[in-house]
Image (cartoon, rainbow, N blue to C red; front, side):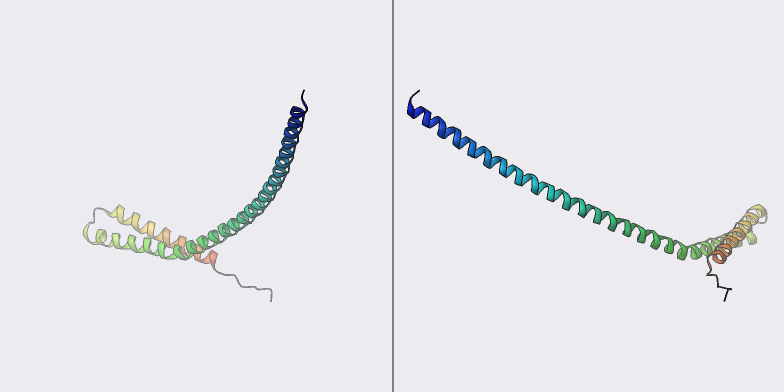
Length: 129
């Protein structure tokens, strides 16, 4: 082999080696940055998960409060609706006495349910003082 060809081959191998070393160094930096990004994303996802859990707990608390607040008007509206439906039947149709009785029983059951829930949900006073 001629000397020029050997020099060209040595230079080509050297340049190729330098580029490969630079490529491996850049790949290592990229891998480190990806690891940092994954760790940061994991931390952020844990924070988001905790925030969502807290929001869900608050929403459940508000939902429970709203259900407790709206239960009394709902039951009262059922009682009033039963009475309103029963009044015309009471005065106009004597043959449907069974419907009137069912309406009165349903209204009484609803009222009892309302008062039981109000009694169960009322704050209890401490008697140990």
